[in-house]
Image 1: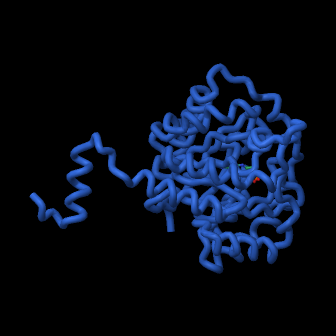
Image 2: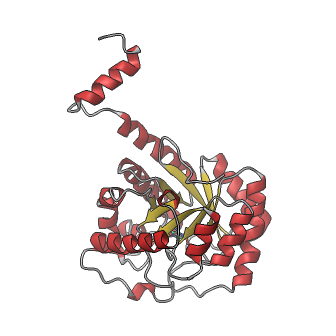
Length: 298
Ligand code: PMM
């Protein structure tokens, strides 16, 4: 099946990191069977799709050899696809994307937006797979030094627009493209909040938007204890769910989270919130009244 998965509400993507060192859940689901079991558990908690990744993007992380990434990711993609899950592969490598798509992955989630591998756009064009282009400026070992913006929202939108131009010229269709502001990637703490608060600007650019705030450092700093020490990753899930609600209310297509249950509730709250018609909009109210009465009141 092709195309970007869709629903009436914002989707919830559950994270399945098959890595020994991801910043919030490294090593917990490192064997294929543990990772598949974890993915199925996330579906039970309300995940609409699962993002399988074999390379940590934790700040400072070193690159993983390509064969190790393939060995980590492919058995998990196989196991989850066989159980009917909608699978996304979190990779910056064209060869990993190609193999995962051949095994049934429906989405390629590329945190580098294609900048890490020249062959990526060609694979996306050729396979017709849905593709997340995240805002990125460099690999994890250098990204903390690349946080220099005039206006972080305008700069991120402009850089994402250039990713879109590259995708189009490689033959990728607009219907395949999802954009992501890349929270925490070459973004110091304070740079993340404008990207969230001004999310409607990115949504307004016309592509589905994915938001990945889950357990990130800027939430740890927000929730710092009295001595200023950041809240640990596992203590950031309430704040993550709050971001999910607000992002969904702002029109995000999907939220990417480690703890699914809270965000599954949050996106439903946002959908109910958004479904209430604006009393200032008479056309919308009339349509709503028609829907309730079968159009018999006029
Ligand atoms: N963040 C991480 C990994 N993959 N993908 C997208 N599209 N957006 C993100 O914000 C994102 C991502 C880092 O978090 P992890 O190490 O906990 O998976």
